[in-house]
Length: 91
Image (cartoon, rainbow, N blue to C red; front, side, top):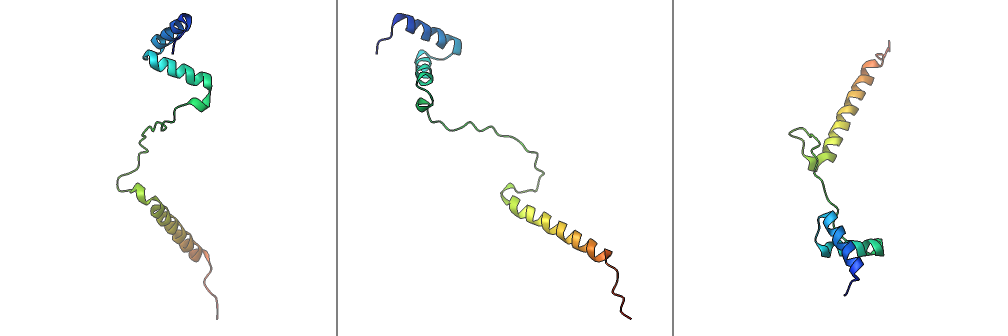
């Protein structure tokens, strides 16, 4: 492939601006010109994040943990309801 001198100069300038090799500047420019269809398929960048989970909580068993919390809540509510009901007054 042969590039016109003015185009080669623009691409060299773009490569310097981006701090990338000439070849990469050419490829990026061609992809941009061709649109999304020419975008390379790369895996998305994953950025790890600490969620501050307390020690002893197994993240692989979050479903079980939530079930236990719901069971404790249900038991506490059932206990409160039985305490609020008046005693059976049969004489």
